[in-house]
Length: 294
Image (tube, rainbow, N blue to C red; front, side, top):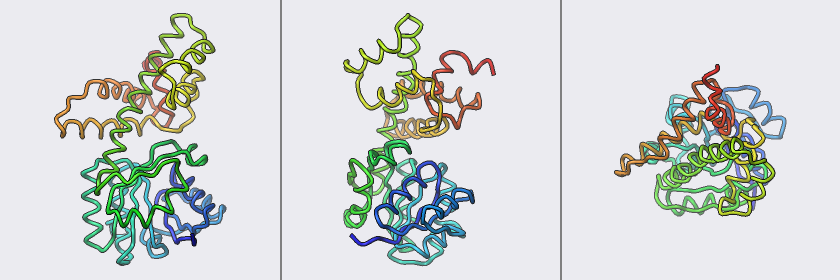
């Protein structure tokens, strides 16, 4: 496949690693971030830096964004210096942030009014899994647009699935995170109870890995809980946001969630303690009441 002209809006913990992998695949990547240091890292790796999202779109055939807040995405897509201002009919925009499905669908409609096709393509897996290409990507949008992107996305991931129409990729991500986020809190409870009851880490690791608890969450999050390793992969503040979206979607669907709201309260306590940027495994210190000592 010939290299594509791609743009990345948001060069944070996911956007920059994704850009580096795309360049390894032979694509030209132009990026924009409000942090000049992040743009320097992209340039040092062989990419090019733009002064705005509009400039990214001017230099690209396909743009990507992965940002934390909806207002940031709107500013960089339909805002006064956003991708629509490049005036490029036929441009494809791939929105990879985790947002409410209805919001993603509405954004796709606003971009379509400017002649831009959009896919919602959120990622499951933290930034270290971008480097090993072990993420999965769930993609909502028109089938022909998905097929256009498939050769670009598939080398990045262990699985790339077209989930259906616009908004369905976001729905699948919210459903996925509903489990992942709550499970992180449950794992923290499990580790702490085991410790307090006198089990060693070695015994717990061996027995849990051989039991029905085995799986990716135990391997990755469980190990960080045992080690009290809070270096950020999936940040506390992102868990709080994503669980809020899950609760909102469930309410709209007539589902009265019980587990997710309870788990979210623990992550909210971690955020209130000033640990919002830390890995979500920090929630174990909330169970240990360490947030109240701050």
